[in-house]
View (cartoon, rainbow over the protein chains, first blue to last red):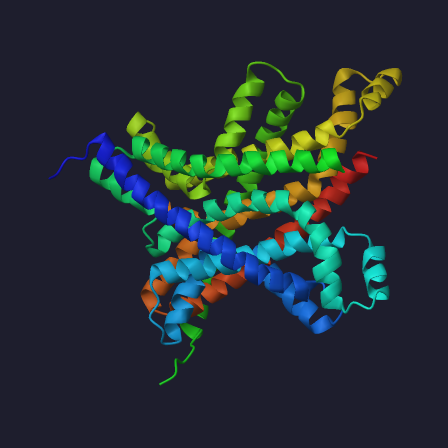
Length: 216
Length: 222
């Protein structure tokens, strides 16, 4: 049996950390794009897109991320497409992120006074132009802090993907704990890895929030 | 050939799913009561800046809020025994849920306490309330009333998060689902029904907490 030194453990964990980071970025960017679309549907004046978006958000916010992962992992496979844990993880986390971001951004758009919509409509902008040129630039300022805050949830959410066999930080930690028989040390380091990713995000979210309140 | 959906092998195991769901609800109930209690203590210590506990709770809150629940669970379940503390699956699950919810509710309730104007306590003193009465009617219940929706959401998030407790073989709902799909090979159907069950539980807990909020928290804080 080979022996793991402390530095072997750290080196392997760093490799896992890179996958956690990659998955977080993919989910956050993909989730942002889809989330924008869902948000636009959610604030639509037509009831059909609004209800679809509301159901979508309810569904993702009311069920465990683990179940969403399983459904994507096994559901896509049923359609006859061979799906790797990495693809399943990226797809499920993207959908999960999009639902939460859509709801956060809707709140920001709702907080813009109605007069802004009316004023831009009186300038003969169509609803999408009103959103694009008048509402979103103002809503963006409010949205930055909660969006950065939510990114912490995305990074933490990636840990669940270890369960479908994606070798990110938690999965790497599990294998190392089994190999070294030192779960206390290994999981402590794993937790430290997540903390180093998440704490700066938490701090900047808090800083951005305070700056927004100071300027408002 | 297209895939034929077959929910019958899952429906036949409804009793297993319901038993799992019940256990998830039990875990959530214990976790919520103890977690919110811990949160109340933490919030008071933080809001009144009682040293050195204020700093300890501050570090605890940041550590828990910036690490995944799954890692906290593994750390407790696999890590503690190597320090000589033996702990069963459901004890580890409850402990992880309490510690996790405790950190979030510390921050949520602290926001509620800090939103209470100072004049309120002075008014309570003017009405000859003793410290305990003032604390209960002027600090705690109004603070909980203000943040009750946020607290309810957090309890539901913890309930949904408890799905990963199947990974340490705590026999809650997702454990039951794993067991069933390993028997009937109907993974998608099993997880679809399980997901639906989680959704119903989330709605149920939301209704229950809204009712508790209206009946006990909001009314007595008037």
